[in-house]
Amino acid sequence: NAGVTQTPKFQVLKTGQSMTLQCAQDMNHNSMYWYRQDPGMGLRLIYYSASEGTTDKGEVPNGYNVSRLNKREFSLRLESAAPSQTSVYFCASKWTGGYNEQFFGPGTRLTVL
Amino acid sequence: DAKTTQPPSMDCAEGRAANLPCNHSTISGNEYVYWYRQIHSQGPQYIIHGLKNNETNEMASLIITEDRKSSTLILPHATLRDTAVYYCIVRYTGNQFYFGTGTSLTVIP
Image (tube, rainbow over the protein chains, first blue to last red):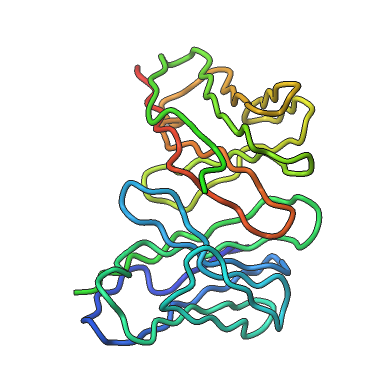
């Protein structure tokens, strides 16, 4: 199993450009998550999807949109990138219910100039 | 909203036990305590979690005080590969995990 995969690994954007970060998991998990991590900081939750067809805002949702395309895939879109969105973005997944652990992907390093 | 407080950094000699403290004085009765670690800039890795009883797995032990206001993660025999940032997280009964800034553990040869 590949676990949680993210594409791309690195991306540089200009202010105002848009892009979509892709995340996929092959563990048949119900819940998926998007976090951002700024330098020297912990992870902050952007959006999550408790199950296919549902999405909810996390701690820092402004400037982002998400799509739960199917059970495997959860994408994060920046419609008009800003320098403040320069960060490392992590996707995670877990079984819904109970108190199961989250499994994280390797991250996407995004720089907005 | 700081749910947990951890020291910013700690050192530990290789082969010795590493004891990482965490304060979570506002924890509610049904919130679990989770520990994750992040090596370099990789995705965080799950270590252990607990509610009120002490827990042990192949990676670590988790000691939670009786009043649940603090906990300690114990790595019994630290190795150089345990050098990482360790996050103590209180999980809401919903889906949200709140990561703080963690403790940067350096294992010294």
